[in-house]
Length: 364
Image (tube, rainbow, N blue to C red; front, side):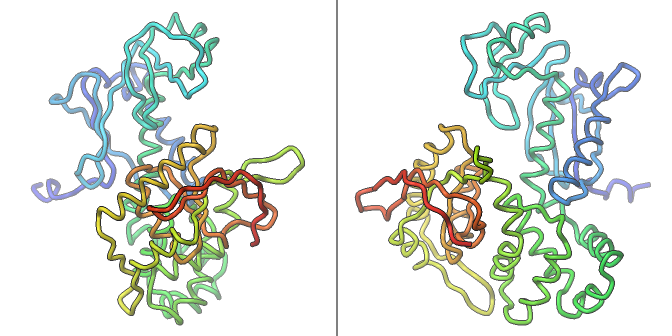
């Protein structure tokens, strides 16, 4: 029927005809099994039920190309080479390897398509070697994490609430939808997922919103209260274990003058939080933070900024377009038993940048 043409798939994978063997189980393809594993992984890691992936072949694509769409719109494309392996250099590879130079699609790493016979040699040289199906599955995983907020439908939020209701019926009855509307809960969950904060602990999220939404109508502010309640979960994502049983968070911090410059452009009112920062100012400030974060990344750590809660969200909005995997934590989100090591202090443009390398212990 014509009505079927009106349906828009939430998540879609289009493949060129050369990649059909990766999907076709009769030809030994296991991409469908890999995607099922990805759905389980994301449920455990993020608390998000990934929507089914509609897979279809597209003869207009190059034979080894694929395209990922959300609600009918292309968000990424890449290619995979059946019969070859992808050798990736994560920064520790020693020596060069023979193959076709390319870029790994999920994380943008330098990579080479190599003959399977070269696998052991590549691994000896510290290259990470994966098969063509893994290339596609890993790319989809990363894209779903990056666009999780767009994939969280109102229907899925209702399903999450039903799950909480089974475990804590009295709490849900008291809070939803009387105090916390489903639409507001969806917006807060999207705010969290946008910054890769897991939403598995729905009880804490609903309970915190039940406490704070009667006091503020600003959902961005409410999100900050929820983040504070989830601080141990957030901090654990970025802190590394140390020898003496404690954890260490390697990061960049912001000088009070820098934070004051950012806060001057923030307006909070009944309609919510708005930022009236000129594009040139935003780019200049973001550039300084991104430059400082290169020291963290080059040392093998995740790009993390620690800032005051008042400017945390705005700093993330400024920096994430330049560095999509950046995390910006509030000082209140760093738990007491984690040591903070700041490798750079970002100052207000126009002042002489200063560096710091000493360790300090954050106050929870």
